[in-house]
Amino acid sequence: MSKGTRWGKVYLACVFVILYAPIFYLMFYSFNSGGTMYEFEGFTLDYYGEVFQDTRLLIIVLNTLVIALLSALISTIIGVFGAVAIMYVRRQSTQNAFLALNNVLIVSPDVIIGASFLILFTIVGIKLGFISVLLSHIAFSIPIVVIMVLPKLQEMSTTLIDAARDLGASNRDIMTKVILPYISPGIFAGFFLALTYSLDDFAVTFFVTGNGFTTLSVEIYSLARQGISLTINALSTLLFLITLALVLGYYFISKRGNTGSVKGAGRP
Image 1 (cartoon, rainbow, N blue to C red):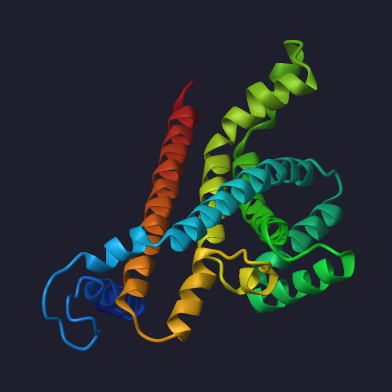
Image 2: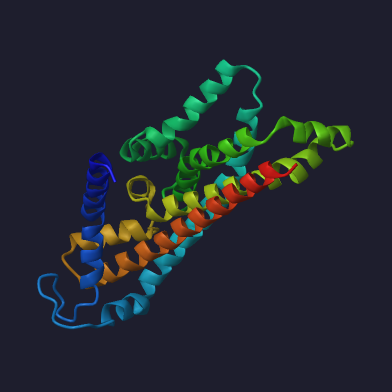
């Protein structure tokens, strides 16, 4: 092992420690019977029990899951057709323009996006609540799906479509029986990423929530402002584990898709 490679691994390990140490610190003290984050006195699951006994909190969790699933599903459908449309634009300059517009929401700060949606909904007359949060999550999830689906479309050989046309397939058959099955790993990856982003989002949701409707991330922020409570630790731990499960699901689906592509490319 070269010296540069060894120092690179050390640097990477330090980055991961800095990123994950606060999370594991929070998770560790969610089991502290002492009620503080200064000294661990004993193991308890009482704070997790408080989370599941809080009816209002469970309703907020349900709201968060409904928003995440609906926004991920709708944004995946729109994003897939958007990626197909961008892929088959004939002029390269027009295609680059659409890609640039698609990437604006990804690179823009969440605060600016949230404030923009707040102004838009106020002008249009949409009341802040379930609908405003759902529309916002759909909007910032669509570019994520497009980015995940486009590489699979670019990998697909045009000869597959030509062969389908030669066999008499209609445009609908080509879409449903050729294109969609081929890019399905990208579709699932985009869905899981959109779901993860929706579950974790705070900045955009903070601007567009209202009328008694809130999500888990906003509720955790509100609870944290009231003072230190290990119930927050337990709630944050559950949210982190759900997000981790979704990310791992995305990873395995992407890995399976890449493996399938390699095997398909190796067939005569």
